[in-house]
Image 1 (tube, rainbow, N blue to C red):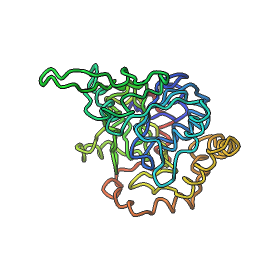
Image 2: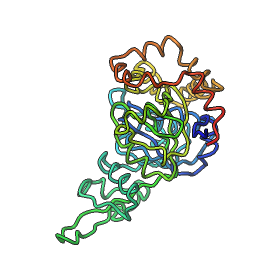
Image 3: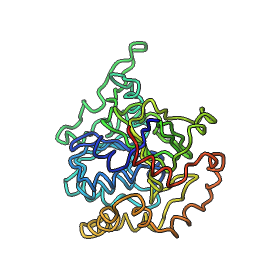
Image 4: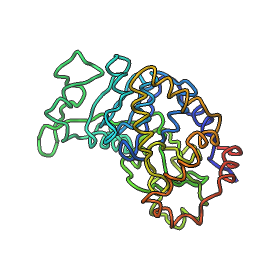
Length: 329
């Protein structure tokens, strides 16, 4: 049978290129995100990316610190309880990255507009503030009338704004469970992964676990991303680490703090890249880098029960890896 499951390095080689508009970001700045995909982007030395993140995560923090992103658009740039994203801050302050700002709702609406193929999105938020009139991509113009231009509601005659829709070249989306056809279930906060999966021109899923398709048939109402819109599936346990994947593993608080501190300086970032980007050759090497003890600790958290209804369909690690190396997506 054909399968969409391929290796992570093949997914990045096949679906990414320098200068592309790349989207990720998912369940809040500390929740599920395809951070492992960002690590592989750096391993393959992608550059000049235009990053679209609904909310910043450690992935954008990492990419910015490495100088891989030239432009970024997001609705939130912190790391919640772990402080401001030091790698992102450093890149912006040094003039290596231009950061465009919208609200969280504004980013969701722009993704929805891309998903529905709208020419523009009627905007009733972000109006009357610097979010409307300040455009990082055109810093010399203020007030800038092109970021959220005024349009007239044809029914009421009221003046409102217009968001530009987002249609990224590629979205790398973290999911909890996927089958070999690309059907996916997300546990925990969905955030804007539904809209992002429909807005992007291509979608690659990073799944913490692979399951038999019978799991998707048992819970069809939970399949928020269907295989028909997915190009490829990457089996990569702990793909969101050091962030959390509800039901699979908790946030690694110690590593979140250490990682953000390291990315705050050029020397610290270089050491982090050496230890956690360039130090492994494959999935098993990546998991070994996290450590068996740490993985066990994070997997035994308060949300582990969320996975219980699906455990009977989980593919064993060796079988899932075999699908990856034998895939013909």
